[in-house]
Length: 303
Image (cartoon, rainbow, N blue to C red; front, side, top):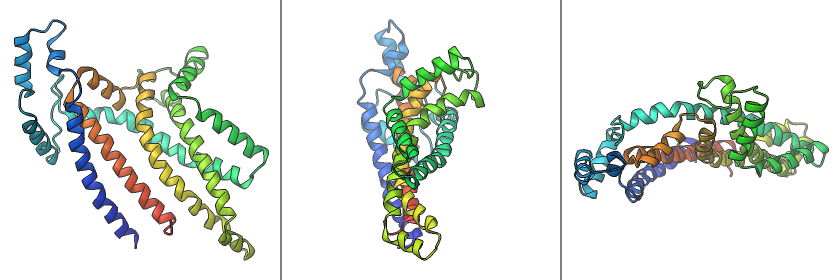
């Protein structure tokens, strides 16, 4: 099977998955406890005012009618409007997407070369002091939760030494991104680097690499793609983890991204915003899995 046919087959599976997740998201968000009309009515809500708000927002319509209207809007790219601010959900998500995309993008951009470099270096010197040091450090750092590491780094570099901004309130400048990106990098670099190391060791011991060495061929060019194929698929889980890790990091460093928007939407029970964000996360997961499978197929078609 060639790469194009494989990608088309995976895409044919991914589209129904996104549609199914969209239905599930609407049902689960609707099942959340609380009432947005009560939240909007204030601390001492008047029952008549609550009913008026529900009527204005369409919350008193039957479930099936609201779902049909929401699904029809999705086909037109309309995710509805926020119950709190009245702004289009798509506009809210796009405004919050930039800080999150910058954090996640920089993390992945640095994650790939660092993981490959550390993993390959440890594999080529298996059992050496470098290998043991990298293994010990990665195991220790991987055990540290993101929020704990973030607090430690903020305390040391943001407050005590005052070398870097402790929050992102002043804007996403280069200096303000150092600490949050470092926090997001630590665990995936440790896990991906260890995976690259283990797969590289297995590949170096394989018959075809030993044969390439005997013939004087460029054995490293043959070994590296096969060693990276499992790591590429592991990056899929890392990106999924980033969606959750970014929420924690944005909360600690006060960065107005998707995580902060999600927390506010949950607090105000802003259902359309919750549904839009959940659908975005689900579509991102399906798309990243598709890209990872295609990349793994390209690197190691036999796998």
